[in-house]
Length: 287
Length: 182
Ligand SMILES: Cc1cc2nc3c(=O)[nH]c(=O)nc-3n(C[C@H](O)[C@H](O)[C@H](O)COP(=O)(O)OP(=O)(O)OC[C@H]3O[C@@H](n4cnc5c(N)ncnc54)[C@H](O)[C@@H]3O)c2cc1C
Ligand code: FES
Ligand code: FES
Image 1 (spheres, rainbow over the protein chains, first blue to last red):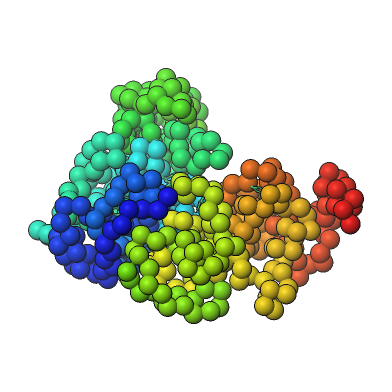
Image 2: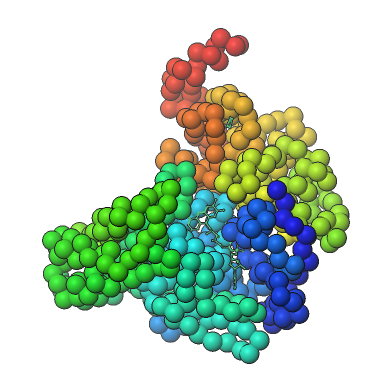
Protein backbone atom coordinates (compact mmCIF):
# COMPACT_ATOMS: atom_id res chain seq x y z
CA UNK A 1 0.00 0.00 0.00
CA UNK A 2 1.03 3.62 -0.33
CA UNK A 3 0.58 6.25 2.36
CA UNK A 4 -2.45 8.56 2.43
CA UNK A 5 -1.78 11.97 0.87
CA UNK A 6 0.13 14.50 2.97
CA UNK A 7 1.83 17.86 2.60
CA UNK A 8 5.64 17.77 2.75
CA UNK A 9 8.16 20.14 4.22
CA UNK A 10 11.93 19.82 4.04
CA UNK A 11 13.61 22.29 6.40
CA UNK A 12 17.39 22.69 6.54
CA UNK A 13 17.76 24.02 10.12
CA UNK A 14 16.26 23.16 13.52
CA UNK A 15 14.65 26.64 13.61
CA UNK A 16 12.94 26.07 10.27
CA UNK A 17 11.82 22.61 11.37
CA UNK A 18 10.27 23.93 14.60
CA UNK A 19 8.53 26.66 12.59
CA UNK A 20 7.18 24.16 10.05
CA UNK A 21 5.83 21.99 12.87
CA UNK A 22 4.28 25.00 14.62
CA UNK A 23 2.62 26.17 11.38
CA UNK A 24 1.46 22.68 10.46
CA UNK A 25 -1.62 22.38 12.65
CA UNK A 26 -2.66 19.38 14.72
CA UNK A 27 -1.61 16.51 12.58
CA UNK A 28 2.11 16.79 11.93
CA UNK A 29 4.65 13.97 11.87
CA UNK A 30 8.40 14.37 11.98
CA UNK A 31 10.23 12.11 9.52
CA UNK A 32 13.74 11.01 10.54
CA UNK A 33 15.05 7.88 8.81
CA UNK A 34 11.51 6.82 8.00
CA UNK A 35 12.29 3.18 8.76
CA UNK A 36 9.50 2.96 11.33
CA UNK A 37 7.30 5.85 10.19
CA UNK A 38 7.04 5.02 6.46
CA UNK A 39 5.98 1.38 7.08
CA UNK A 40 3.37 2.63 9.56
CA UNK A 41 2.12 5.17 7.01
CA UNK A 42 2.04 2.52 4.28
CA UNK A 43 -0.18 0.40 6.48
CA UNK A 44 -2.28 3.56 7.10
CA UNK A 45 -1.80 3.18 10.83
CA UNK A 46 -0.66 6.80 10.64
CA UNK A 47 -1.98 9.35 8.16
CA UNK A 48 -0.53 12.76 9.06
CA UNK A 49 -1.55 15.91 7.17
CA UNK A 50 1.98 17.26 7.14
CA UNK A 51 5.31 15.44 7.18
CA UNK A 52 8.37 17.46 8.24
CA UNK A 53 11.45 15.69 6.86
CA UNK A 54 14.61 16.19 8.95
CA UNK A 55 17.01 14.44 6.56
CA UNK A 56 18.47 17.74 5.27
CA UNK A 57 18.98 19.30 8.69
CA UNK A 58 22.77 18.94 8.70
CA UNK A 59 23.23 20.34 12.24
CA UNK A 60 21.39 17.28 13.60
CA UNK A 61 23.84 14.78 12.16
CA UNK A 62 27.21 13.78 13.57
CA UNK A 63 29.11 13.14 16.79
CA UNK A 64 31.26 15.58 18.78
CA UNK A 65 33.19 15.56 22.04
CA UNK A 66 32.33 17.97 24.85
CA UNK A 67 34.42 17.45 27.98
CA UNK A 68 33.59 14.05 29.43
CA UNK A 69 30.54 13.66 27.18
CA UNK A 70 29.88 12.67 23.59
CA UNK A 71 27.12 14.56 21.84
CA UNK A 72 25.31 12.55 19.18
CA UNK A 73 22.98 14.40 16.78
CA UNK A 74 19.50 12.89 16.59
CA UNK A 75 19.79 12.40 12.80
CA UNK A 76 23.03 10.41 13.06
CA UNK A 77 22.20 7.19 11.21
CA UNK A 78 22.85 3.72 12.54
CA UNK A 79 25.46 3.33 9.76
CA UNK A 80 27.14 6.59 10.91
CA UNK A 81 27.27 5.20 14.46
CA UNK A 82 29.07 2.09 13.21
CA UNK A 83 31.79 4.08 11.43
CA UNK A 84 32.34 6.90 13.93
CA UNK A 85 35.81 6.95 15.56
CA UNK A 86 34.69 8.74 18.76
CA UNK A 87 31.91 6.26 19.38
CA UNK A 88 34.30 3.40 18.65
CA UNK A 89 36.57 4.70 21.40
CA UNK A 90 34.05 5.82 24.03
CA UNK A 91 30.70 4.18 23.29
CA UNK A 92 31.32 0.54 22.41
CA UNK A 93 28.04 -0.46 24.05
CA UNK A 94 26.09 1.70 21.59
CA UNK A 95 28.18 0.40 18.68
CA UNK A 96 27.60 -3.25 19.66
CA UNK A 97 23.85 -2.72 20.02
CA UNK A 98 23.62 -0.79 16.75
CA UNK A 99 25.37 -3.63 14.90
CA UNK A 100 22.40 -5.83 15.81
CA UNK A 101 19.74 -3.35 14.64
CA UNK A 102 17.82 -4.43 11.55
CA UNK A 103 19.89 -4.91 8.36
CA UNK A 104 22.39 -2.90 6.32
CA UNK A 105 19.74 -1.15 4.22
CA UNK A 106 17.65 -0.10 7.23
CA UNK A 107 20.81 1.00 9.10
CA UNK A 108 21.65 3.37 6.22
CA UNK A 109 18.48 5.43 6.78
CA UNK A 110 17.36 4.71 10.36
CA UNK A 111 18.64 7.17 12.96
CA UNK A 112 19.69 7.05 16.62
CA UNK A 113 17.25 9.85 17.50
CA UNK A 114 14.42 8.23 15.55
CA UNK A 115 14.89 4.92 17.32
CA UNK A 116 14.80 6.65 20.73
CA UNK A 117 11.82 8.89 19.88
CA UNK A 118 9.94 5.88 18.51
CA UNK A 119 10.51 4.09 21.87
CA UNK A 120 9.60 0.62 20.70
CA UNK A 121 10.01 -1.75 23.69
CA UNK A 122 11.76 -4.24 21.38
CA UNK A 123 14.09 -1.54 20.00
CA UNK A 124 17.71 -2.00 21.00
CA UNK A 125 18.90 1.55 21.56
CA UNK A 126 16.58 2.80 24.33
CA UNK A 127 18.03 0.27 26.83
CA UNK A 128 21.55 1.36 25.91
CA UNK A 129 20.69 5.03 26.43
CA UNK A 130 19.08 4.16 29.76
CA UNK A 131 22.01 2.02 30.95
CA UNK A 132 24.42 4.85 30.13
CA UNK A 133 22.26 7.52 31.83
CA UNK A 134 22.20 9.47 28.57
CA UNK A 135 20.74 12.98 28.50
CA UNK A 136 18.18 13.93 25.87
CA UNK A 137 18.24 17.48 24.54
CA UNK A 138 14.81 18.53 23.30
CA UNK A 139 14.07 21.69 21.32
CA UNK A 140 10.64 23.30 21.27
CA UNK A 141 8.95 26.61 20.64
CA UNK A 142 9.99 27.81 24.11
CA UNK A 143 13.66 26.83 23.81
CA UNK A 144 15.67 23.78 24.83
CA UNK A 145 15.37 21.43 27.79
CA UNK A 146 17.45 18.45 28.87
CA UNK A 147 15.79 15.28 30.13
CA UNK A 148 17.61 12.33 31.74
CA UNK A 149 17.08 8.92 30.13
CA UNK A 150 15.32 7.72 33.27
CA UNK A 151 12.52 10.21 32.59
CA UNK A 152 12.48 10.19 28.77
CA UNK A 153 10.66 6.87 28.25
CA UNK A 154 7.13 7.09 29.59
CA UNK A 155 5.19 4.12 28.25
CA UNK A 156 4.78 1.84 25.22
CA UNK A 157 5.82 3.94 22.18
CA UNK A 158 5.55 7.04 24.37
CA UNK A 159 8.20 9.52 25.50
CA UNK A 160 8.19 12.93 27.18
CA UNK A 161 8.38 14.57 23.72
CA UNK A 162 5.42 16.95 23.40
CA UNK A 163 3.75 17.96 20.18
CA UNK A 164 5.84 20.66 18.54
CA UNK A 165 9.07 19.37 20.09
CA UNK A 166 12.09 17.78 18.47
CA UNK A 167 14.74 15.52 19.94
CA UNK A 168 17.92 17.25 18.77
CA UNK A 169 20.82 15.53 20.50
CA UNK A 170 21.74 12.78 22.90
CA UNK A 171 24.58 13.23 25.39
CA UNK A 172 26.46 10.10 26.44
CA UNK A 173 29.12 9.76 29.14
CA UNK A 174 32.44 8.51 27.82
CA UNK A 175 32.86 4.85 28.75
CA UNK A 176 36.41 3.84 27.89
CA UNK A 177 38.28 0.55 28.27
CA UNK A 178 41.23 2.58 29.57
CA UNK A 179 39.17 3.48 32.66
CA UNK A 180 38.40 -0.14 33.44
CA UNK A 181 35.06 -0.32 31.63
CA UNK A 182 33.98 -3.44 29.77
CA UNK A 183 30.71 -3.64 27.86
CA UNK A 184 28.46 -6.14 26.13
CA UNK A 185 25.13 -6.05 24.31
CA UNK A 186 23.63 -9.54 24.47
CA UNK A 187 20.54 -10.09 22.32
CA UNK A 188 18.14 -12.93 21.69
CA UNK A 189 16.11 -12.78 18.49
CA UNK A 190 14.74 -14.90 15.71
CA UNK A 191 17.04 -15.19 12.71
CA UNK A 192 14.73 -13.67 10.10
CA UNK A 193 13.61 -10.84 12.39
CA UNK A 194 16.18 -8.61 14.00
CA UNK A 195 13.86 -7.28 16.71
CA UNK A 196 14.86 -8.36 20.23
CA UNK A 197 12.78 -10.89 22.10
CA UNK A 198 14.89 -9.85 25.08
CA UNK A 199 18.27 -8.13 25.16
CA UNK A 200 20.65 -6.89 27.84
CA UNK A 201 23.02 -3.92 27.69
CA UNK A 202 25.75 -4.19 30.31
CA UNK A 203 28.68 -1.96 31.28
CA UNK A 204 30.95 -3.03 34.10
CA UNK A 205 33.82 -1.09 35.66
CA UNK A 206 36.61 -3.04 37.33
CA UNK A 207 39.43 -1.92 39.60
CA UNK A 208 41.95 -4.27 41.14
CA UNK A 209 39.90 -7.45 40.69
CA UNK A 210 36.68 -5.88 42.03
CA UNK A 211 33.63 -4.47 40.34
CA UNK A 212 33.18 -0.81 41.25
CA UNK A 213 30.14 -0.02 39.11
CA UNK A 214 27.67 -1.88 36.92
CA UNK A 215 25.04 -0.47 34.58
CA UNK A 216 22.48 -2.81 33.08
CA UNK A 217 19.67 -1.92 30.67
CA UNK A 218 16.94 -4.40 29.69
CA UNK A 219 15.25 -4.42 26.26
CA UNK A 220 11.66 -5.66 25.92
CA UNK A 221 11.11 -6.51 29.58
CA UNK A 222 8.24 -4.05 29.93
CA UNK A 223 6.55 -1.21 28.03
CA UNK A 224 9.69 0.91 28.47
CA UNK A 225 13.37 -0.02 28.76
CA UNK A 226 14.34 -0.87 32.35
CA UNK A 227 17.42 -0.97 34.56
CA UNK A 228 18.24 -4.21 36.36
CA UNK A 229 18.71 -2.25 39.59
CA UNK A 230 18.89 -5.19 42.00
CA UNK A 231 21.63 -6.83 39.92
CA UNK A 232 23.51 -3.54 39.64
CA UNK A 233 23.44 -3.06 43.42
CA UNK A 234 24.51 -6.65 44.09
CA UNK A 235 27.61 -6.21 41.94
CA UNK A 236 29.16 -3.17 43.61
CA UNK A 237 32.32 -4.13 45.48
CA UNK A 238 32.25 -7.85 44.67
CA UNK A 239 35.17 -9.84 43.24
CA UNK A 240 35.16 -10.26 39.48
CA UNK A 241 34.22 -13.92 39.16
CA UNK A 242 31.73 -16.11 37.38
CA UNK A 243 30.11 -16.98 40.73
CA UNK A 244 29.43 -13.38 41.79
CA UNK A 245 28.19 -12.45 38.34
CA UNK A 246 25.90 -15.47 38.16
CA UNK A 247 24.46 -14.80 41.61
CA UNK A 248 23.77 -11.16 40.77
CA UNK A 249 22.23 -12.00 37.38
CA UNK A 250 19.63 -14.20 39.11
CA UNK A 251 17.97 -10.93 40.23
CA UNK A 252 17.86 -9.42 36.72
CA UNK A 253 14.12 -9.94 36.21
CA UNK A 254 13.10 -8.33 39.52
CA UNK A 255 10.57 -5.58 38.99
CA UNK A 256 10.08 -6.32 35.29
CA UNK A 257 6.70 -6.74 33.55
CA UNK A 258 7.34 -8.27 30.14
CA UNK A 259 4.54 -8.94 27.69
CA UNK A 260 3.14 -12.22 26.40
CA UNK A 261 3.21 -12.34 22.62
CA UNK A 262 3.82 -14.59 19.64
CA UNK A 263 7.56 -14.63 20.31
CA UNK A 264 7.57 -15.48 24.00
CA UNK A 265 5.59 -15.78 27.22
CA UNK A 266 6.34 -13.40 30.07
CA UNK A 267 7.91 -16.06 32.32
CA UNK A 268 10.19 -17.19 29.49
CA UNK A 269 11.26 -13.58 28.96
CA UNK A 270 12.11 -13.33 32.66
CA UNK A 271 14.18 -16.48 32.37
CA UNK A 272 15.91 -15.05 29.30
CA UNK A 273 16.69 -11.82 31.12
CA UNK A 274 18.62 -13.74 33.78
CA UNK A 275 20.52 -15.88 31.28
CA UNK A 276 21.38 -12.97 29.00
CA UNK A 277 22.38 -10.76 31.93
CA UNK A 278 24.79 -13.41 33.13
CA UNK A 279 26.30 -13.74 29.64
CA UNK A 280 26.50 -9.98 29.16
CA UNK A 281 28.13 -9.43 32.56
CA UNK A 282 30.61 -12.26 32.10
CA UNK A 283 31.66 -10.88 28.71
CA UNK A 284 31.76 -7.27 29.93
CA UNK A 285 33.87 -8.26 32.93
CA UNK A 286 36.28 -10.17 30.68
CA UNK A 287 35.45 -13.59 32.16
CA UNK B 1 3.00 17.79 -6.55
CA UNK B 2 6.67 18.44 -5.88
CA UNK B 3 9.33 18.66 -8.55
CA UNK B 4 12.33 16.38 -8.23
CA UNK B 5 15.54 16.10 -10.20
CA UNK B 6 17.23 12.72 -10.06
CA UNK B 7 19.76 10.70 -11.99
CA UNK B 8 18.68 7.09 -12.39
CA UNK B 9 21.01 4.54 -13.97
CA UNK B 10 23.01 7.34 -15.55
CA UNK B 11 20.12 9.33 -17.08
CA UNK B 12 18.73 12.60 -15.70
CA UNK B 13 15.04 13.01 -14.96
CA UNK B 14 12.96 15.95 -13.84
CA UNK B 15 9.48 14.97 -12.69
CA UNK B 16 6.55 16.03 -10.59
CA UNK B 17 5.66 13.56 -7.86
CA UNK B 18 3.20 13.44 -5.00
CA UNK B 19 5.04 13.53 -1.63
CA UNK B 20 3.45 10.19 -0.73
CA UNK B 21 4.92 8.43 -3.76
CA UNK B 22 7.43 5.82 -2.64
CA UNK B 23 10.73 5.77 -4.50
CA UNK B 24 10.03 2.23 -5.75
CA UNK B 25 6.72 3.31 -7.28
CA UNK B 26 8.33 6.31 -8.95
CA UNK B 27 10.98 4.02 -10.46
CA UNK B 28 8.50 1.42 -11.65
CA UNK B 29 5.48 3.45 -12.65
CA UNK B 30 6.89 6.79 -13.76
CA UNK B 31 10.23 5.65 -15.19
CA UNK B 32 9.23 2.12 -16.22
CA UNK B 33 12.17 0.63 -14.30
CA UNK B 34 10.26 -2.53 -13.42
CA UNK B 35 13.43 -4.50 -12.67
CA UNK B 36 13.04 -3.27 -9.09
CA UNK B 37 10.16 -5.11 -7.43
CA UNK B 38 7.96 -4.84 -4.35
CA UNK B 39 7.73 -7.95 -2.19
CA UNK B 40 6.15 -6.81 1.07
CA UNK B 41 4.32 -4.06 2.90
CA UNK B 42 6.52 -4.06 5.98
CA UNK B 43 10.06 -3.12 4.84
CA UNK B 44 11.27 -6.62 5.61
CA UNK B 45 11.96 -8.39 2.32
CA UNK B 46 14.57 -6.22 0.57
CA UNK B 47 13.28 -7.06 -2.93
CA UNK B 48 13.09 -3.31 -3.65
CA UNK B 49 16.75 -2.60 -2.79
CA UNK B 50 18.45 0.08 -4.92
CA UNK B 51 21.50 2.27 -4.37
CA UNK B 52 20.80 5.84 -3.32
CA UNK B 53 23.97 7.92 -3.67
CA UNK B 54 25.95 4.68 -3.68
CA UNK B 55 24.32 3.08 -0.61
CA UNK B 56 21.84 0.21 -0.56
CA UNK B 57 18.41 1.25 0.73
CA UNK B 58 14.93 -0.24 0.59
CA UNK B 59 13.21 1.90 -2.05
CA UNK B 60 9.79 1.09 -0.58
CA UNK B 61 10.88 2.88 2.58
CA UNK B 62 12.17 6.09 1.00
CA UNK B 63 9.90 8.76 -0.47
CA UNK B 64 10.57 9.73 -4.08
CA UNK B 65 10.83 13.38 -2.96
CA UNK B 66 13.70 12.35 -0.69
CA UNK B 67 15.71 11.26 -3.75
CA UNK B 68 15.65 14.82 -5.11
CA UNK B 69 19.20 15.79 -6.13
CA UNK B 70 20.44 12.23 -5.73
CA UNK B 71 21.85 9.48 -7.88
CA UNK B 72 19.89 6.21 -7.96
CA UNK B 73 21.21 2.92 -9.34
CA UNK B 74 18.79 0.07 -9.93
CA UNK B 75 19.38 -3.50 -11.06
CA UNK B 76 18.86 -2.19 -14.59
CA UNK B 77 21.94 0.00 -14.30
CA UNK B 78 24.61 -2.38 -13.01
CA UNK B 79 25.55 -4.17 -16.24
CA UNK B 80 28.10 -2.34 -18.38
CA UNK B 81 28.27 -1.66 -22.11
CA UNK B 82 24.60 -0.71 -22.29
CA UNK B 83 23.60 -3.99 -20.65
CA UNK B 84 25.87 -6.18 -22.80
CA UNK B 85 28.24 -7.22 -20.00
CA UNK B 86 26.67 -8.46 -16.82
CA UNK B 87 28.02 -7.23 -13.49
CA UNK B 88 30.19 -9.96 -11.88
CA UNK B 89 27.54 -10.44 -9.18
CA UNK B 90 24.80 -10.88 -11.80
CA UNK B 91 26.98 -13.34 -13.67
CA UNK B 92 27.74 -15.36 -10.53
CA UNK B 93 24.04 -15.59 -9.59
CA UNK B 94 23.38 -16.91 -13.10
CA UNK B 95 26.26 -19.38 -13.11
CA UNK B 96 25.80 -20.74 -9.60
CA UNK B 97 21.99 -20.98 -9.56
CA UNK B 98 21.64 -18.15 -7.06
CA UNK B 99 17.95 -17.97 -7.91
CA UNK B 100 14.87 -20.03 -8.54
CA UNK B 101 11.75 -17.89 -9.07
CA UNK B 102 13.99 -14.82 -9.26
CA UNK B 103 11.74 -12.43 -7.36
CA UNK B 104 14.27 -11.66 -4.64
CA UNK B 105 17.18 -11.51 -7.09
CA UNK B 106 17.28 -7.79 -8.00
CA UNK B 107 17.36 -6.87 -4.33
CA UNK B 108 19.82 -9.64 -3.45
CA UNK B 109 22.20 -8.45 -6.15
CA UNK B 110 21.96 -4.78 -5.16
CA UNK B 111 22.54 -5.63 -1.47
CA UNK B 112 25.45 -7.91 -2.40
CA UNK B 113 27.15 -5.27 -4.56
CA UNK B 114 26.85 -2.87 -1.63
CA UNK B 115 28.32 -5.43 0.76
CA UNK B 116 31.29 -6.17 -1.53
CA UNK B 117 32.14 -2.49 -1.81
CA UNK B 118 32.57 -2.41 1.97
CA UNK B 119 34.02 -5.90 2.37
CA UNK B 120 35.68 -7.28 -0.79
CA UNK B 121 36.48 -10.66 0.79
CA UNK B 122 33.57 -11.66 3.06
CA UNK B 123 33.41 -14.96 4.89
CA UNK B 124 30.28 -17.06 4.51
CA UNK B 125 28.93 -15.65 7.78
CA UNK B 126 29.67 -12.10 6.65
CA UNK B 127 27.76 -12.69 3.42
CA UNK B 128 24.78 -14.08 5.33
CA UNK B 129 24.81 -11.10 7.69
CA UNK B 130 25.37 -8.68 4.82
CA UNK B 131 22.22 -9.82 3.05
CA UNK B 132 20.11 -10.37 6.18
CA UNK B 133 17.75 -7.63 4.98
CA UNK B 134 16.82 -9.70 1.92
CA UNK B 135 14.47 -12.64 2.15
CA UNK B 136 14.36 -15.52 -0.34
CA UNK B 137 11.48 -17.98 -0.21
CA UNK B 138 13.00 -20.41 -2.73
CA UNK B 139 16.69 -21.10 -2.65
CA UNK B 140 17.55 -21.69 0.99
CA UNK B 141 20.30 -19.07 0.43
CA UNK B 142 23.05 -21.65 -0.11
CA UNK B 143 23.76 -20.82 -3.75
CA UNK B 144 23.18 -17.12 -3.19
CA UNK B 145 25.98 -17.11 -0.64
CA UNK B 146 28.25 -19.06 -3.03
CA UNK B 147 27.47 -16.67 -5.85
CA UNK B 148 28.37 -13.65 -3.77
CA UNK B 149 31.66 -15.27 -2.75
CA UNK B 150 32.50 -16.23 -6.34
CA UNK B 151 31.74 -12.71 -7.53
CA UNK B 152 33.91 -11.35 -4.73
CA UNK B 153 36.83 -13.51 -5.87
CA UNK B 154 36.37 -12.37 -9.45
CA UNK B 155 36.15 -8.73 -8.45
CA UNK B 156 39.35 -9.10 -6.41
CA UNK B 157 41.02 -10.29 -9.59
CA UNK B 158 41.28 -13.95 -8.62
CA UNK B 159 40.55 -16.56 -11.25
CA UNK B 160 36.89 -17.49 -11.57
CA UNK B 161 36.27 -21.12 -10.76
CA UNK B 162 38.07 -20.78 -7.43
CA UNK B 163 37.60 -24.30 -6.02
CA UNK B 164 35.75 -23.20 -2.86
CA UNK B 165 33.08 -21.46 -4.90
CA UNK B 166 32.63 -23.56 -8.01
CA UNK B 167 29.45 -25.61 -8.07
CA UNK B 168 31.30 -28.64 -9.41
CA UNK B 169 33.63 -28.81 -6.46
CA UNK B 170 31.47 -27.18 -3.84
CA UNK B 171 27.99 -28.54 -4.38
CA UNK B 172 27.15 -31.53 -6.47
CA UNK B 173 23.43 -30.93 -5.95
CA UNK B 174 23.77 -27.65 -7.83
CA UNK B 175 26.22 -28.96 -10.41
CA UNK B 176 24.11 -31.80 -11.69
CA UNK B 177 21.08 -29.87 -12.91
CA UNK B 178 23.44 -27.35 -14.49
CA UNK B 179 25.17 -30.10 -16.41
CA UNK B 180 21.83 -31.54 -17.46
CA UNK B 181 20.68 -28.21 -18.83
CA UNK B 182 23.79 -27.34 -20.84
C1 LIG C 1 12.96 -4.48 8.77
C2 LIG C 1 13.27 -3.64 9.98
C3 LIG C 1 13.93 -4.22 11.05
C4 LIG C 1 14.23 -3.47 12.17
N1 LIG C 1 14.90 -4.07 13.19
C5 LIG C 1 15.23 -3.35 14.28
C6 LIG C 1 15.96 -3.93 15.37
O1 LIG C 1 16.35 -5.10 15.33
N2 LIG C 1 16.24 -3.17 16.45
C7 LIG C 1 15.85 -1.87 16.53
O2 LIG C 1 16.15 -1.22 17.52
N3 LIG C 1 15.19 -1.27 15.53
C8 LIG C 1 14.87 -1.97 14.41
N4 LIG C 1 14.19 -1.35 13.39
C9 LIG C 1 13.78 0.05 13.54
C10 LIG C 1 14.89 0.99 13.11
O3 LIG C 1 15.89 1.01 14.09
C11 LIG C 1 14.37 2.41 12.92
O4 LIG C 1 15.40 3.10 12.34
C12 LIG C 1 13.97 3.17 14.15
O5 LIG C 1 13.05 2.51 14.96
C13 LIG C 1 13.29 4.48 13.81
O6 LIG C 1 14.24 5.38 13.37
P1 LIG C 1 14.01 6.29 12.11
O7 LIG C 1 15.14 7.27 12.08
O8 LIG C 1 13.80 5.47 10.93
O9 LIG C 1 12.69 7.09 12.56
P2 LIG C 1 11.31 7.37 11.80
O10 LIG C 1 10.72 6.13 11.31
O11 LIG C 1 11.52 8.48 10.82
O12 LIG C 1 10.49 7.95 13.03
C14 LIG C 1 10.01 7.11 14.07
C15 LIG C 1 9.15 7.94 15.03
O13 LIG C 1 9.94 8.83 15.80
C16 LIG C 1 9.57 10.18 15.56
N5 LIG C 1 10.83 10.95 15.49
C17 LIG C 1 11.92 10.60 14.76
N6 LIG C 1 12.93 11.47 14.95
C18 LIG C 1 12.47 12.40 15.82
C19 LIG C 1 13.07 13.56 16.42
N7 LIG C 1 14.33 13.91 16.15
N8 LIG C 1 12.31 14.29 17.28
C20 LIG C 1 11.03 13.92 17.54
N9 LIG C 1 10.42 12.84 17.03
C21 LIG C 1 11.13 12.08 16.17
C22 LIG C 1 8.79 10.17 14.26
O14 LIG C 1 7.87 11.23 14.19
C23 LIG C 1 8.13 8.82 14.32
O15 LIG C 1 6.97 8.88 15.11
C24 LIG C 1 13.86 -2.09 12.24
C25 LIG C 1 13.19 -1.50 11.17
C26 LIG C 1 12.89 -2.26 10.05
C27 LIG C 1 12.18 -1.61 8.90
S1 FES D 1 9.29 -4.28 -0.80
FE1 FES D 1 10.75 -3.08 0.16
S2 FES D 1 11.39 -4.33 1.77
FE2 FES D 1 9.82 -5.53 0.88
S1 FES E 1 14.48 -17.09 -5.86
FE1 FES E 1 12.41 -17.04 -5.34
S2 FES E 1 12.40 -15.70 -3.66
FE2 FES E 1 14.48 -15.97 -4.00
